[in-house]
Image (cartoon, rainbow, N blue to C red):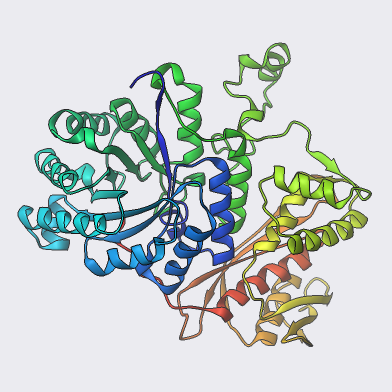
Length: 519
């Protein structure tokens, strides 16, 4: 690549990333993430798979209407109904792209598609042609390309470019490839496909062997002009190539890769936190770039070196990825304008109504806490993107308990504008008692599959953030997982809010999504 070559960043957090178990987002949350991705500077947002469900269709359509700067992409299989539905969702986008895919590897041809090579080529060509009738920006993915015979892969790629594919994406669908193999595949396509100069080569790597980022970078070295990735690397199974890792590798080792992206890297940490809190998939402390320990130094020899020259043990500046050296920013006397400014810096786009709600909650929090940190502000903002509408609204609770005896819990909620209360003496401790009280007052039974508590910031008065994952047990929604999140300086109140948020998702319900055969 030339020294000034640009690599496009194709973000599929809202499509492939959302398919992580338990990570489904509602429409409000998806639009918020889409705006954050636009601010981050991604070139393409894959907003969803429109034919999968009415909810996916609506999400793609609303994102296409609301987010105007990046290309908005919708996924479709190589058949007319998928392509037509994708275009219907994308029609109002400022810059639409239809992404069609079809499996090409021998194992997929034999056992899944039951097609020979000629039929696969015919179907791929037909899918691209149909999509090209709708718009000019067409991406084609040969699913399981990393396990496809190179001669046949070259044949398919040449055929789809001939009929109008402007981007050809090479997926490592099952995370099987190695960096050298990905380099060789991209190198072969660039040298053996005669019309390759008419399309951008892309790569989409899964992380089953922990090689997604390495494979993507190898593809860039071989000449790939687009990398498909997700925030925090979320996605099917072990996830996808991590956007923040591949972007910072390209920036930090520009001497090696000799290319750049358009990403505003200062937005990486705020966007990571937003996606983590919306999806409920928290970032490990030791996660590269955005983990809490990524710029922490505990060893004495490291600390000594850092005090003398930060370059001794840091190859990136924390400010470059959006970490603030000073976290304390607001107090009880701060005004609405200061709060709005800080929320914007942290990556939250609040409406006037949302800002007013956050400001009121901020004042209440300031009376309970001496110091307000960025994490506190983020927690307040994120509550504005909860599931809507709330059928059951938390009002309050009381608990009486002692070791060895079941707690007595009184829970108050509002439904349809009317307050209701229930009291029970049951459960193994106050949290279990609150959980059982919520089941009783809502009439919805679930099984708790995950329960996590962490401090939002520091200090004994820190807000507790509770994340839960519930599995619905009713016949209609059996087996579906629903997430909930609650934040409060009172950990029991945070637990009640989290359980109730998840139960609200169960109550609102919805038909199961149709997932495509994954890229």
